[in-house]
Length: 85
Image (cartoon, rainbow, N blue to C red):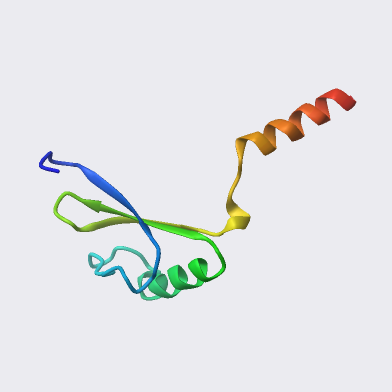
């Protein structure tokens, strides 16, 4: 990871396993992020963190299973709608 501008994406499996030291002003929601990660993981969701080459956190991606979409599900729904028209 010696290239400038390289970003590493890691899955968070436990909210307390990550050192969530964020840059000042990272997010208005900064005080709540660790709690939300814990809650989402507790209901079966997923969380990812992106870090720069120097190890600084540059982003978080948090979602639960209800927010997941699968291309195959949408394709099946579209084909069944099309065939009944």
